Length: 146
View 1 (tube, rainbow, N blue to C red):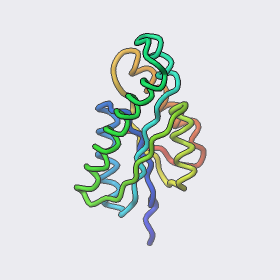
View 2 (cartoon, rainbow, N blue to C red; view 1 turned 45 degrees about the horizontal axis):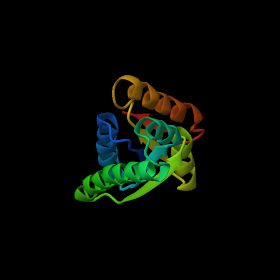
View 3 (spheres, helix red, strand yellow; view 1 turned 90 degrees about the vertical axis):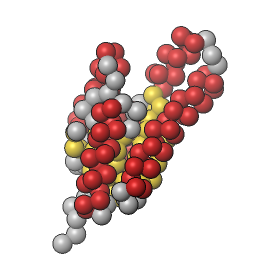
View 4 (cartoon, rainbow, N blue to C red; view 1 turned 90 degrees about the horizontal axis):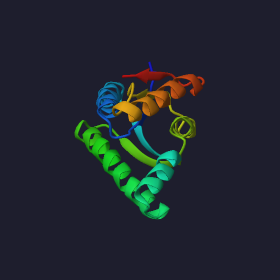
C-alpha cells in the first residue's frame, strides 16, 4: 500500500514552534519515506514595517530578511539530511498563508505541517493568525498543527 503522504510542506519562520513542527515533520517524512518542501515566506508587511523603523532602503531590508530566511531553511534542511530525509527549500515573498498554500499546491503536496504559533506578543498573534488562515484556506490539503 502506498503511503498516504508523499510530499509534506513545512513552513518555517524561525520560531521555536516552527522548528518543533519541522522536527516532527522530519520524523513523519522518515517513517513514510516522504519528501519535504520547507518554505519560508518573507512577509511584505514586515518589509514595510522594518523600513519605517530602521529607515534603511527596502532592498537592504529584503536582503537581510532573505539571509535570515535562508538560515532557517538551511537549518531545517540539515536536520532532515541528518535523518536521511529528502528536503527542498523554498524562499518566497508575499502574504504568508497564501504563499504557503500556493507552494503546497504547486508542489502537489499531500500534507502541510505547521507550528501552532510563533514568537511572543505581537509576533505570536500575527503568526498564530497565519496558522489559522492556512487551516481555513488549505482546501483539500490536510494540515497538521504541532
